[in-house]
Image (cartoon, rainbow, N blue to C red):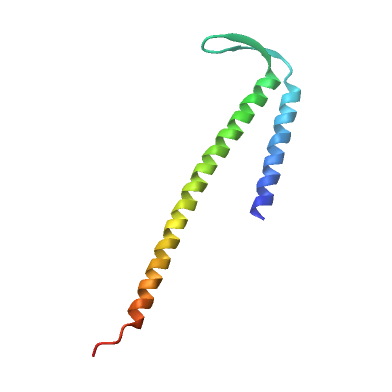
Length: 95
């Protein structure tokens, strides 16, 4: 369910970006650090949108991988503690 909502939100954002791009056909002057060019505003908006989308995807993947690594460590610890608990339960009781 969560992935369907995410997909719908992503599609809506892309549609909004397309509509905004179609409404902005003016040519703007873009100054780089070492160069300058004229580019359509719609193209500039699309480039910035894609850069933001990719950057947020990379950041999300970093957090996801950190959680997966932490989860794997905790599962190993749980298995080890389970084995220790089984060993302790199998020891004869001291009176």
